[in-house]
Length: 430
Image (cartoon, rainbow, N blue to C red):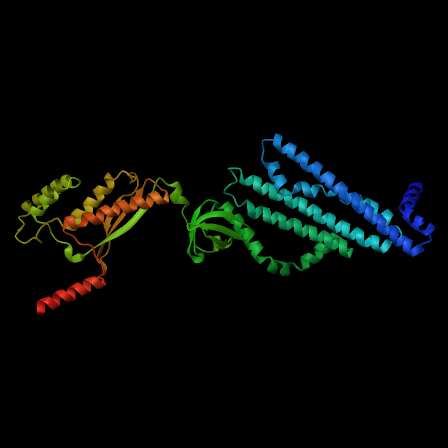
């Protein structure tokens, strides 16, 4: 009681002084309260600045000596700023009752504000630690491709929910348990409000457990116009940097609800697939004559094949007494078949093509645009720019080689083609 009385005497110093100077008691009381609050504010601000500077300097010196980057991220997440507010807040909490001893209503309101701010401070500190953990884990190779953002966001939401429960309890005077029970009764409404968050959380877990998508994967998601590298996987969204350096945001739940293409298998495989077709005009396909075969033998890549193949055909036709006056009789070689063999030999000889993976040159069903001759192989170099260069190099050569086999590539007539045809017809008529 003596200690309490002495402190109360000190807190009323200015009130007694003003009364002695002839001031009204009520005015002196409120003026004394104002001065005490001003002095307390000054002390708290000075304490906050000194403590915050001390904490920051201590952590800075500590981080300079450690090898880990966790403490560096701790400083960047404003952790020292929040921790530095604990002692000033405690100073206000334990001092203000003596200053407002005669103003119980105001004291009760300020105590609630202090408690609410204290709860928020705990939330900010927890959030800072969680963000620091997220940034630190992203630097570790074993967690770099994991959806760390999703898990941290869930924990942050949980911290905020618990924090608001305590704030509500402080404002209303009801216990946290009763509030939690009331919250359970309103769970249907909460599920509706947080539907996207819940779906995103479940999706992020399935994405991680089933290894559907990793950060750094190249995905193509036509529904959302995404074609690029996954840069971030959050609780609600997945961020994709497209090849034109734009960004596309995809709902996380769509990764398990819709179909998309992940190119990781290609990136991890020994080669990248090349698959294109050359359309050959059907009326340019024909049986080749012995003279033409001798001409084709000048092409070094297929000369051994032509000699061996022609011997087999001649042996078969002679054994069957085939009448070769009509080319359709017996077995024959066609210019399209020889060109197909040439394309196959060219791919096997190409240094950029992976020889241990599929190399296929095949005909597909004829179309209105001609006969598609499809090239399917794999390049050794999977980098996009080199892959495109290799693909272009192969088809530049094959397209240029088509006329050597007395074949033609289908091409729809242009305006110049039609004009030249009409001019030639007009010339013939005149």
